[in-house]
Image (cartoon, rainbow, N blue to C red):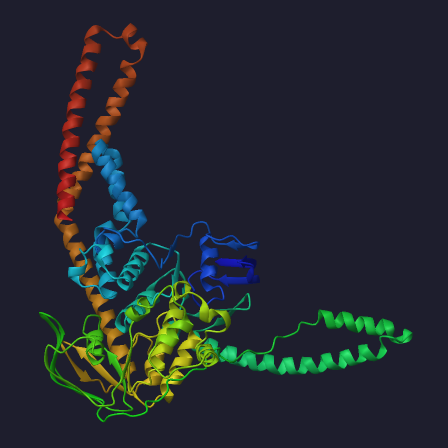
Length: 620
C-alpha cells in the first residue's frame, strides 16, 4: 500500500501540509479533491519523489511501477502512434536489446530478447495503443501525424494515451478529463474501471469520480481526510461532518466561555489560584474546532439580457464547416429565449463547428442563419483564454471589455465575486492558472448581458466549488443557453433539452443524458470485447500459421546449444598442454578437424536460425 505519514511541507513560506497522513491500499481507486491551490498536485509530487517533505515520510512499495500524466510536454517529432508506444518503456527497452543483438549477431541474446518481447506483449502493442488513441478521440489518419503538429489540448490527450500505455502498479492522473469531450471521458471511465492497479485521480468531475473511485481524499487546511465511496458519498459524509462540527463548535464555545469566566473570577484568589491554573492548562489543551467555512468564495451571476428576440436565432437548411469541407449539412433549427440546450456527440461530429456558427465566428457554407434584433451572443471557448493579454491584469481587462462602465471600487467588487480578490486583480494574467483564466473570461462575458450564452467546455480547470457556482448562475439566467460539456453534472443541472450531433447533422435526443451515457459505455464495451475477440482470433491464427516455424526454431536452438557445448569441450582439451604430451599426432589432427567441422555446422545452423526468425517476425 501507499502511505504518507505525518507529512509537513512548506512552499514559498506557506505551509501546504501540516502533519498530514494518507493510506491507499493496493488495488483501490482514490479521487483527490479540494479547492485549487490546497496542495493536490503537490501531493502527487511527493508520491513521485520529486518533492521531499520537511518532516514525515512517503512509503511506497519498491516493486511498484509508477505512471503519471504530464500536463505539459515539449512538442515531439514522433508520430502519435509511436509517441503513445513510447509510454511502454519496458517494451522500448526490449526492442533496443533486439536491435543491439541483431547488430552484434549475438543469437543467444537475440533469442532471450525475443522471449522478453513476447512477455512484454510486444506483438499486440500497436493494437493496444490504437485502442487507446481511438478511445481518446483520435482517428486512424491521426496515428501517423507528428505529436508537435497537434494543438495543445490534443497533445495533452496524447500525453494521457502514453500514460495509459505505460505498465504500472500505481497510476497518478491529474485532471485527466480536461480537454476531453463527453465520449472520450466515458471511454476513459470504462478503461479505468478495468485498471487492476492502484489509482490516484485529481478531478473536479463529480460523475467521473462517482463512476471510477471507491474512496475520496479531501485536501484542506494542510490535512487530508479519506472518505469511503465516490464523490456523492463524500459530499453527504462531509455535510454531516460539518453539521456535527458546527454543533460541537457551538457547544465548545459555550464551555470555553464558562471556563474563561471561572478563570477570570478566581485567578487572583489564592485558594482558587491552583484550580484556575489547571483550567488554563485545560483550555490550552482543548482542540478548538475551526468555524465551518461552508460558503463558497464565488458569488456571481449572469445578468439577464435587457431585451430578447423570439426566436433568438434560426438556421434554415444550412451547411456548416470550412471552405471546401462541410461538417454539418441540412441543418434547420431554432433557439428561443429561455432554451436550455445540451449538445452531445462524438469527437469530430461537429459540436464546436455548430457553436462557432451560432457565435458568428464562421459563416454558413449554404442556407441561412437569421438572428433576431436582440440576440447578443456570449461565447466561451478555450481559444479565448489563450487570447488574453499576458501582460495585462484582471482589472484592466474588465475596464477594456464591453459593458456598462464601472468605477474602480465597483470593478474590484465585481471581480471579487468571481474569486479575484485583493491584489490579485492587478496580478499579470501570464501568472494565472487555467482555472483563473477561465473565470476571468466568463466574468467578461457576463458583463455583456448576452441574450444567448454559448459555452464550449467551460469547466476545464475549474474546481468543484466554481462549477457549482457556475451551475447556480446559469440556472438563474433567463437568456438562451447552448452548452457543450463533458461534465454530466453540469449538463443535468443546467439543460432540459439535448441535441445529438451525428453523421453530419443533428437531431433532438429526448431519451436523456443517462440513456446516452449508458448507450455510449455499452457500445465502447462491446467494441472492446469485439476487438479483443478479434485480437485473440488473429493471435491464434498467427500462432497456428507459424507453429512449424517455431518448432523448427526450437530444433535449431537445441542444435546450436549442442554444437556450442561440444566446441567448448574441444577447445578446453586443445588448450590444455597435457593433451599434446599424451595424444598422438593423428588424434590431435582429428580433434582439430572435428573442431573445424563443428564451427562450420554451427555457423550454418545459426544462419538458418536467423532466416527462420526473420520469417516468424514477418508473419507477426
